Every structure is written in C-alpha cells, then in structure tokens.
Image (cartoon, rainbow, N blue to C red; front, top):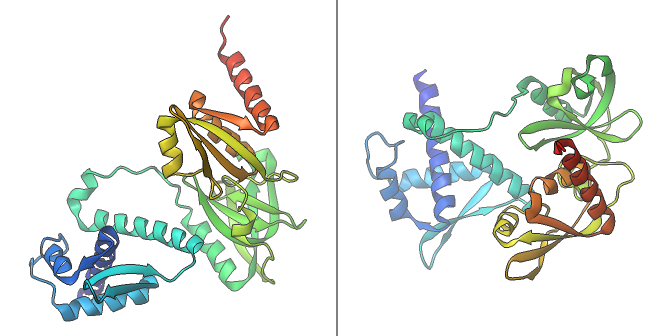
Length: 305
C-alpha cells in the first residue's frame, strides 16, 4: 500500500507541474519552486530541488506526450505539444479534465467549490468499444431507438470511433449496409466484441468535419451560412465558435456578421434557435425559411388566443 500511495503522490505531482506550466505559459524554475512551497500537494512546504524538477519534467514528457522546453535566453519553461492541432485540442481537453480530477480528489476543500454536470459514465460500454477499436473487432450490440422497447434491434457493426457531444458519449460505427451511424451509449442495452475484421475506411474526424454536432443527415451537404449576432451575444460565438470554419465577416455597432460552412442539420438548427432573437440567419434562404417555420410552430404551441 505504501508503494501504491507513493506512486499516486508522484502522479499528482506530475499533474501539478503540467498544470503550473500550462497556466503560466512561461515560467522560471525559481517561480515553480516558490509555487511548490505553497502547494497543497507539498505537505512539508519545502522548496523543489532542481534534480527532482528535472526528473518530474522528464516523467511528464514521457507520460503525457509533450515537450517542456526551456528558453535559454530567459530561462523560462513552456509547453510544446507534439500532436497536430486537431489532436492537441482533444488532448488539452482531456488534460483539463484530469487536472480538475487531480484537484478534486487531492484537495478536500475543493469539493465544496466544484459543481459539475452529470455525464453518464457508460464505463463498461466505453471500455468494450475501445478494446474493439484497438483489436480491429466487430461489435455485437442490442440497441433501443428512442428508448422504445418496441424499436429494439440486434445488429453487428464495425466501430469507427467514439465521440463526446453535449455530455453524452456516442459509438460511431459502420452499419451492415455500409453507412455510418452514431449510437448514444445510453440506448445501447448490451454490447460485446465480435470477430476480427479489417478497420473501417471511414475516418472519425472526416465524418464530422462539416457537422456542428453528432448528427449526419444523408444527402445533406455543407452550405455557406451567414449569421447576424447581437454584439453582446457575439462574444460567446467568438470565444466558443460553432464550427472551425466560423469567421467574422463584418463588425457593426450593435451586431457582428459571422460566416461558416456547415451542414444545416437538426442539431445545428436547435443550436441557432436556443439563442432566440439574438441570432438571425441571413443566408441561405432555405435555412432561414426552416428556422422561420420552427419559430411559427413554437408560437402556435404557446399561443393561447
């Protein structure tokens, strides 16, 4: 138990070092050592020996696949991720979750200050899907459409990947007819590995490159979309773009015009509607009309006259 506790403490130190360098972007060893003296992970509040720092730095690089570089002119350390941009964004998100978990479990008082949305775990299904992907195996699953017992099916699919969207995990897989489909894990009643097979030719990132979320509608193609967003709400769009293709076209006194190229799927339309009158679709006309139809339907539902 003592050895296990020592390893756990080491890992928490590695996470602390990673978090410290990421947070400060560039930081000297003396600053790191000073922060370590005040850290909740340092029971003795002793300075950080330089040799220990170097050992921790190498461990972080090895475990997390990053480079910690030192600018020899300023003697400040910074992080360089070895992955392409698309992958590094995912890795950073996972690290953020790991940092939060590290603080949450290691610093008892943190539990009073953190409130998170509930995310269905689906650990058993997730683990089985990941194993199948690693071993190039098919997956046998029993799936319930819309939670309706009458719409339950048994099928064998070829996994493409897993995707998290809006606090919900999805298995993205190739159906027997060759078409990709996104199965939310909470509707999968059972899942088991099948025979070894060749990997799917579909690529997860390519499948959703033109999508806002998780929905892919057959026959629907990406369109150039123009949005007029109230100035205050536009800050939300700037900080959290709807899609990587999003661009600012024009800035006015009371609004900003954005453009993006994306498939106008059901979940994209619901996202636009969630912003109410603060967001207006200017183009294309077909999407503007679809949005207007939705608004009229909602008005009729609530109109008591």
